Length: 266
Image 1 (tube, rainbow, N blue to C red):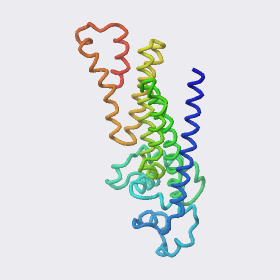
Image 2 (image 1 turned 45 degrees about the horizontal axis):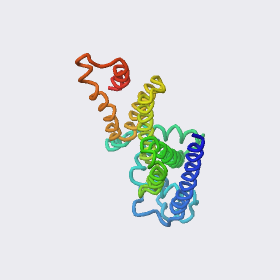
Image 3 (image 1 turned 90 degrees about the vertical axis):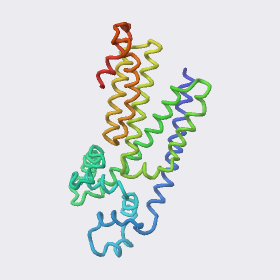
Image 4 (image 1 turned 120 degrees about the horizontal axis):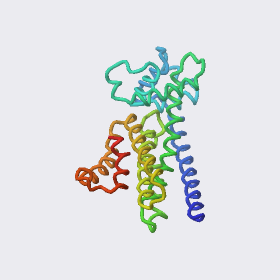
């Protein structure tokens, strides 16, 4: 067991190192990318001056970095963090994530007069932290659910691929994807742990709390992106599996207890 734990720690350290190197490359490219890009919406938000394109040449590297990660959906999340959901199209984007950006950005901004930069920076920091944690959770999840002979390499490869995903830069920008990934993977991990605990009979109390926690994380993931609701289908499957026996009053007491946390989610 100690050897397994040491192996997992070593793999985690390798994943963290790969993640940091890859993100350093991507974020350096974002910081040193020339020009405002073809979508100048971020530049308009960050600099309301009519001379914004002229002043771009003298902006700091930090401002360039934030600007180049403020694109597409990030504009809505960051602007909603500043003023809330004003226009109807803004409701297509997670209000919960924008609220987190507002809280984090306000802590970082302090008494700053123009906190928009801080909301964007808060999103960048949160996304990178969540992406790293989701990589580690994914690795732990796969080492738990795969057969012993496949646990040595497949979880590590899957975690590395999650780092190197083509969406890596989106997972670094003020988008809800990285946080959704972390919450969803954590919900799956807790569900898998509850199944393992129930099958081995180690602790039914722990198994029940893990299953309740799984549903809670799926609910939080749904607040980030509505398709997180689909993850709850694995809990619905468990209810459907026991429902015929429950309706016919033939369910054993241990199985009746297992259905209670599931029915609580429903």
